[in-house]
Image (cartoon, rainbow, N blue to C red; front, side, top):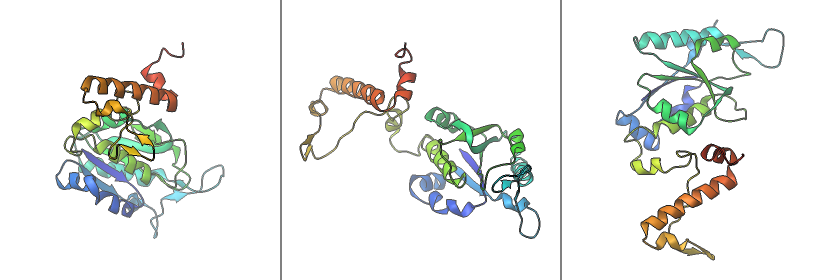
Length: 234
C-alpha cells in the first residue's frame, strides 16, 4: 500500500508516521507513505500558492498550478501506474469503512491532496478522481483528515494489525456497530458482565453478540441500521 500526501505542512506527519503500528508497518515494508510539499511549485520569492478569489470573498484560495504541477511530478515518478488522486474536501463523499476496504486493495499509489486557507480553485476538480470528506465540519486543512484515512486504510493491510479476526468483527463491517465488550473485573460498582459471556456456550455467546449489535445499532445509529435492515422503514 502506497500513499502520497500533497501538503503545505509535511512536518505535521512526523510524529504520526513514527509511532505505533503504523511505524512498524512502514519499517516492515507493508505500507509506504511519502509527503510532498506542493509549495515547491509556488510563485515568486516566497513560493506563494494562494490568491484572492475572483468576484470577492473572504480569505484566500489555493491556486491550481502548484498542485497540478506536483501531481504531474508524481506521475512522472511512477510511470505506467494509475495514481488514484483524491481531493480532501468537505464537499466530498463521506468516508466510510467500505471505502477504506476499497482503497486498501489499490495496487497503485493513492494520492491525498490536503487543502488550506478557504479552499481550492474549483478547476482542480478536473484533475482528480474523487473527493472525500471525513464529516460535516470544517478543519484548518486536510492533513488531519488524510491521517484518519491513512490509518483507517492501513490497518486493513494484512499483517499491520496482529489479530485479523478482530478486523472482521469490528463496527461497520456488517453495517452494524460492534457488540458490547467486557474484561476484568466481573463486577465494578454494581455493573456486572452479562452472565452469558461467562457461560462457555459458544453458540449462545454468538447469538447474544449478534442480538446486542443489532439493538445497539438500532438505538444509536439508525442511519447504519437502515442499511442493515432497509425494509424497516416500510
